[in-house]
Image 1 (cartoon, one colour):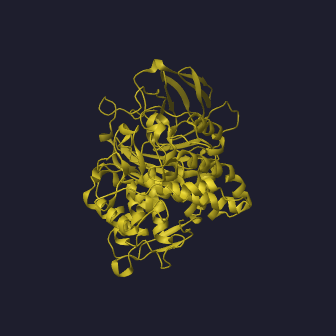
Image 2 (cartoon, helix red, strand yellow):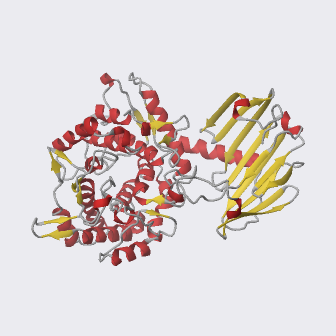
Image 3 (tube, rainbow, N blue to C red):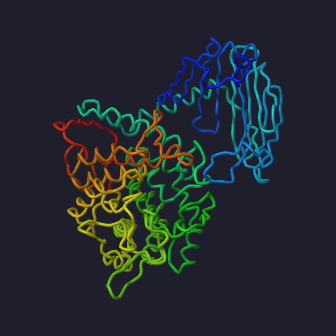
Length: 566
């Protein structure tokens, strides 16, 4: 809430000497500007352990009550493409209980109580309601503190001061940066090193903030609602798998139990389509109800993710406790995968689909006849093999059914000497080139011929419509190039000049408006790719940073605390 300028509301153009710094070492946002010749300074911090926002404003404009803090609550839009609704105040309610130095706001959407917001502020300041969902704080002195705590249930817990929240945030972020993995590219002569290192550092911050909660994150994390506020389990790997390679598996552990919580739903879904085990949904909310459309119920590439997660966690923590925690999830996932594949007697192989939709999603209109996507076949084969290893570790006999399926999956489809997205239908050369994931995201299997995959990667670089690709496609391409022994192509993939490979000054991987002003799968995918390129992978080449070009080619890579990929 700003003072008027020449008798009108202040606009962004009226602010001068603007400077905003995201202090990621201390976890603070520092803003300053001048208005009407007066300096305004704002510090914003978040409590690392609670849903508490703390703001401190300093300015002589506060003392005259010409400036203050405004809090406005939006409604939920009918169109999922929009983030908020400011135009229909009648569709939601805000009940306010105001006291001298505190308040409680109770929020309801569609008749359901969604959020309780408690507020506390500087002694001597005052809060008043100025519109149906709008509140303002004004002070009589040159500083104003406002603390806001958000909860799903009423709470009487005392709110901390600004200084306490700031101190907690500083400790948390200092500890974050002093632990986990690190990469130093500063001795490189390739001029791109600085931008890549910037993306690496800021991606660590953005994923720790937005992708490390108690549930799998939205594609836009906590910044804004995307896809109606729902999260996508096929994207979960891209969001959080990297934590295990960067020595921050504790952040993944906070949400990975979601698979166990929704296991009854996944079992019911599998049984409903005549399969064993558990079939994991795609686009969901906390209750795991699948969002209906022509793609979501038919997508299958999220099915192996729990096995991949489990193996990454076991490599980080090879204990009996890890085996016990993931046992049921690994086995139920493998049971579904084996029973979902069907035996084609004419071809003497197991096929995936129909009906199905491949990871590219472009062939969803042909889902009634679609079958045998390249990435999914390789991912199926590798994951069933990992599940067999888990049986051995747990002292159980290998499953003959899983092994029969694994060894007899359909061959990967090719046309003109390169792998294609899917055997049927023919899909356009746009969006995700996910056949590359068959060797990259997926470790080496006997199903992928490296020479053919190299031709496929070259084909994607030269023939694919790059402007239609998305944020996680570039790290996927880089991982494929690295595993093929083409580090120069790995770097080229990370720097493809295309609209959705932009990283804004704050590290957000911008995609498009209005749905995706940021895209955390791109950040998470970048971090997984960098760890693979720097620390290598199991049974990979032993040289330092095998996925990066050599010193003679302009790259010097120092790293610590990284684990090899699988």
